[in-house]
Length: 285
Image (cartoon, rainbow, N blue to C red; front, top):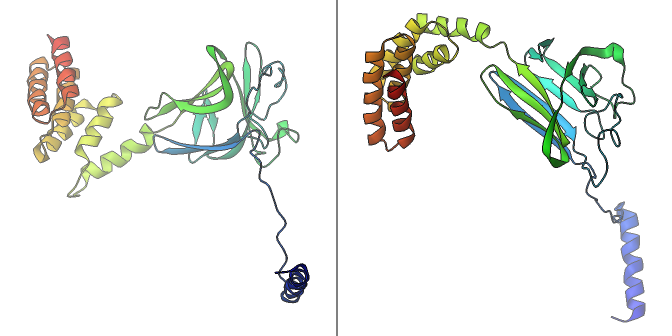
């Protein structure tokens, strides 16, 4: 196609775009964020926790006492204020926090950090931080790491039915926050109601395990684990029976149950439970 025809075609195309209202797309470029956004979700017991935050990196900068000032309110990340949501009431380092969504602010210090749970979750940074909107403030002690962590990280660790540790990690600093969930008072009435009902399917094994793990009525736990075994004689259920009997002081019964659990575990090719039973038997002798 010659130059005149190309120009003519371009004019016709431009006229068509104008007539139809179609606009030529302007080229765009999407660059990576310096502090990428991150969302983490964790269930602790029966409570769902979600944290939305941005993750700055050191990039050869001094972090605490430099990039992040000591003694000043910090957004605990980058960009928007870090947002934390609890589906049920919890305790943070022993402080009661109602269910809801909050901003997680902090005041870093060399020897002590202040953790702030604030109602102002929908804000950029901590520039509009209002102390009057605080739901709770409490102290925690930072722990020094041997290695450097390049990128700011919020993580859950030491997960239990009724607790977990929330760690704020950056550079050579870990700031632990203990989360406690009031689970037993909520769950026990539900377990008792189900077990007292005429339901055909009952969670015998799970209920026995919960009572054993939480130091509750072991006589009930023993009754329920026997009912679970009557339905299915699985090695892990029989092992739980051995542990319950051991706690009740019935060494002979516990040893017999542990030996039976080992026989079943060998058939199932689960060496882990064979070792657990051997250890239990050794402790009881």
